[in-house]
Image (cartoon, rainbow, N blue to C red):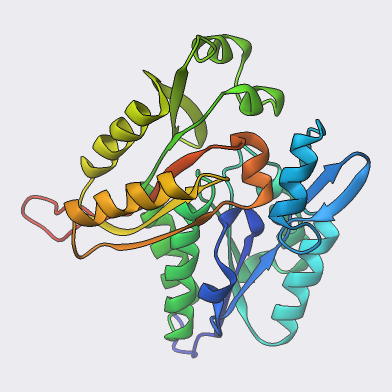
Length: 292
């Protein structure tokens, strides 16, 4: 290995990480927005379109479409950080759910592939947002490109995401699940519970009534304790989110848990009424060795 000092590291992610702006602070972290298109008008996720405007468009019958940032957008972000002397760890939404990772990869190859590490999170929303925040904290502490990237890759195995939906219709209309999965959740008063596994959204269970679905969600989540970080996220369902957060804190009093609404891209596929939990569980100890 070279004895030359390593360059500082900057972390890049995309807006589907759903990281609250106040949590970014002065971390070496930048967020590249995806694009939401409504009635022929394009908006940058989290910049040009408020959640209230987005919800109003849904209620007016406009189904949004989303698209990944352009290769050129990523090139500009990468080149600016490279010119400032940084190496880059770029962490993104599952490549099975979005073309964002592919755009970022093409940009990295064009700019400086030896100085940019791409991480496919295999997840979505604040679930991988926690990995982004940990990576940014390591970068701020002066860790090397190899160290930050290796940590982020390792933590992808600690992700968990469960959500209750009012309906699977939005996932189906957005092309994220097939017709057969949609039909599983279409019976009267059935509330589907989904999980993200191996980078894709999978129907997990069907529960009658939202109250029972929330109870089951809490059970699924508390079975994963202990968590290092967790977020209870929702879209126009704050009371359910706060109730789930309170019960999670009861199950694990030392948990770092936040609550908030998901961004417009993720809400496009989850739909109004969604409530879920995403985060990182504590790495399990390996028998006869250190934690995994």
